Image (cartoon, rainbow, N blue to C red; front, side, top):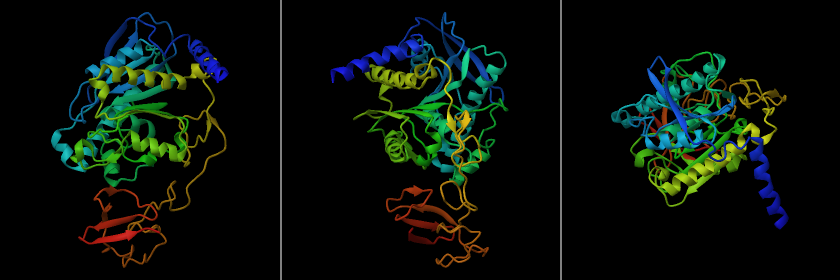
Length: 417
């Protein structure tokens, strides 16, 4: 036991020295903050935090988005300033962004809520592209393009986790698809086109994700750090409707993400539970803030290239075909592992077109046994699936009882085999 402890104690200084003493603890005393416009289209600004006196020219970037339920908040709120200064003093470049906000009335309906979130996500992706553009134009901020992370608090964390893990083609919710299409598609329309919005990972501080399946085997090389209180009623720890059930969309928080990560074997997810805490305890409790920053610093540090090598970026093996089911946007070397969906099916084995959701694709299903026929233009349309507790589901798993609600008013209980 003493020998194991000795090597554990020895390991950290070795990795720490590989990063020239940076990134794990504060090594700079002062921080410079400058403001730039990153979206000319929407006149949006961001604040850039950089350590004063730093001569490193290949620095990791953390982009942060503030909280406020997508209806309030500013990029210079105390939490963002605290995080910006803490990580800039560790040697990172940090950017705190403004993004478009919706009105409180938009939270009444799922369609308008999702439209507001899609606008904010579009802005967040434009911020990533702004920095990638700056790298090509001379790299004034001395950023390593292979080490860009997206983090956020509450609503900002929702932006971050979707920017990092929701990939084009994975969205199944019809309302979310419409919302994204209305805002420029998957990449959005907030500016800086022609540059990648890919990030290396996400830091979710009391955030949630719309579909746990957005996190899948193609993301195993991405980093995910989540911090969450298990009594959170704003963004629930498990799955549920935000703001104590007043917003008609479902999000799955850090607890549900942790369980999902365990089920699929996602080892690059690191979770810090604030037991007995409500929403964002680090926003008002100094001890909780220190605990959160220390945890994020350690897990982020362990993901950096310099902590895993002699300082040179590591080759990442994976599928590099964006049309493949297991496409890995972080891969730098194709390993021949690409897999593709069968005809009429998506990568999850689900029908792309299945109007009655019986598991048989419309292209080959002329009579599903429920008394409806896909070829009949008068066929009732399924508009919602709910469980016995009234929770909305976007997919029907085997063995689950769901109630199908049709546009003609019919309700039918269905257990999928």
